[in-house]
Length: 393
Image (tube, rainbow, N blue to C red; front, side, top):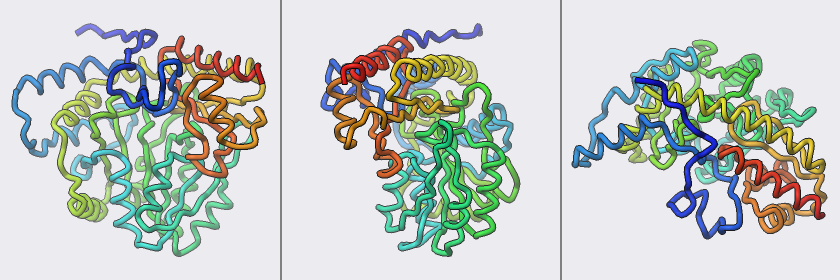
């Protein structure tokens, strides 16, 4: 079979469909959306073919647990990330966040503390608060246009015996950091020394840009693998978020048993027949697609960051090392409130971005998140709109 060449410049028309990104109640026709973290690219051909084959079976009852699901994930981590997983300790989750909730409920108690490195994906905050745990923040430091872990603060907060879990988001959303091996080792050693469990969201682990390397946390050492659970989803790389099919894995038999107890208690074991097909198609046959998509995003990132920093002096683009989001420092625009900034983007620039304060009320003030996983011409049009609106201030 000859290699398929994907035309990411063409993308796929999603306005007028059920795509949440283009929900007309949020994004009217004269506004360009760069918010929710999915892509405006077609999914791999292999996904469409796998779904068509499953649809044509003409029966859609309960599926049994097919080990091919777990094996496809193990294959992906081995081939793409040089990390060996045990398929026996991989399992399904309807999304990353439900599995993180199971982890939080199993390895902490009501009133315990869970540590987040902020700014970070908004549902991290919610899953802690909504399940009776206390939030503790290890704020990352913005140093010369790059976010760095404040290890002195991290060590201090991990030493609190009420802190039971550290959630690491790597690659980091929204800052775009791809943590180095040295950073991950320091985090992991601090946690183990303080008897803190580690949950790692690696959902953006395939989207890594030139000059950076993704390091799976569990692959660093047996000790780290034995004290952690990792959460993944093909949604970001392959634009398959709507199937609500993700996975989690560990290397520790007892952690696996306890996670499965939570999954059972929360009725989280029912797999989606189409999600199964999509995930396995992605992780068994998506290599060429992922390579092409990341190469396209890398060039879009280069052009977008350069355009912002050269043409919109009041906004600074934090250059991402990974993910398809740019964390935009808009404090130079001079707005007194976050509402003014949001209104400026939506009403004046006619773009819909993510509000920075949802990632951290303090850390995100004056920031917005820009999703550039769209045809490059659309991305540049969005940035041109922001420039023209900024010039009118």
